Image (cartoon, rainbow, N blue to C red; front, side):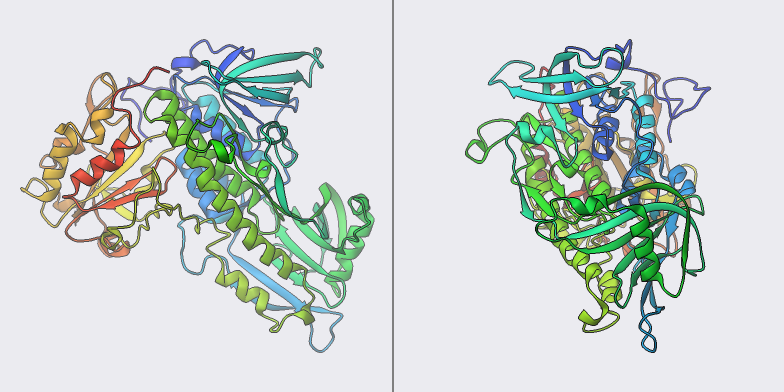
Length: 632
């Protein structure tokens, strides 16, 4: 965390100075906004937290509830999400309060007495070390609290406008604020009052029954739900030995349970198999009484018993897999001819089972993806064509998610005798671990993701996939750290310059690259508006092949040590060396001749280039940068 460069800070450094729209921010919902977010779920709150970093953008988030969410349904936090939390500054705090999954146990019928269950195997949750961050369980409400804190402490001082329900919207052909949104007061003494808000863009994060989705004519298609599960968060006494370990439990004739311990050491969640839903059920299964669900759980757990003492939350849901035809308001015949103005995220776009722990995680990445793009377009950094990449990128991710979840939820519902091998479920869990952990997303070449022409120069940073951090040593203070942990969710592109073998200060390709980056008219840094810090739009870091003690900080090109803040202080924290025994060049397969790794604001690798390919780098950014700030 960097601070004091604007002057001494005596309070909490996480609270940034109010700026732009955050100065004298009106308490009441204004008549006109740049971005209106509908729904304060995970996608909506992350999008609000990201857009709150852009001081000159007016963002408001409306929520029909009268206040914060107290008990959320989602609880699984995959490692990719924790990486995202690190960028927003609260990974350490949420890890401290969460339950950490390190293993999963698999229980199946005893071969000698099939009416009893026995532990048949264990699987390490991250056997390959796919991330330095853990797999967590924590209530969705706490995730929303953390994002709300980030947004409230950001320059725009963004807070949700509770008690407003979305009713309808209309998109005009022109005008500064072409989207007219009708809202109705849903809480408070003026409940029932109707009003309109005009927006430049609307982001619908309003769940599976999304009214925003309906208003733009998107349709959901997919499999009809045919299997029901009772889910309960409970406090109970039991002699089941793995009650504090994540478990997949298959019984001989009672169905299955997915057991997920919760934070706090006592609470746990059970997904209890209620079986196939008849075609003529008409939703009756949703009224299954808790006593029946608990009895079913005891039947599956035999010979162990479950004595439920308190129920924090429960529900019954039917597994269905559905996906919308598009994620914005541009119909197929309009593609390329107009800018999308309305976007949908999360459950408004894709629904599936909860047992792979994907809903909240994928939804947050939807919000991350669209938010930084809206920020760049509204600030004039990028052309409006950037917004078309949201639906193109995220719909593919959602389709892959649904395909995976169909397989996983089907396997969870199978009877033990239907498996060819008793360990088949365990083997599938291990074999596919990268997908549910959130690391299989790989964006195709597009306006903002280059072709993998030079992938061989950095084999450990696949183009289109998330930037997988590794250890480096910061030269100025000798601290070893993960390189990716110094990248915050501030809307900036990252340019990681991995130097050639030459020492700092020597004539070399990396020195030539630094000179070009700071002086050439076609350098992406030239697009940064006058009056802003040199690194306001691009965070450039250099990583030398030598350990920190062999790097002379004064010999490092000044272009890697920009002046920042009103006092034009030198930022020394952009220069790194390698860690002996954990050399990032070896760990990530980086060319010893040097390489440039370009990373998007949402942490995905956008391009890999040689140090000498300045023309290619200039061409890549020329497509997505406005050479001067456009009028907002």
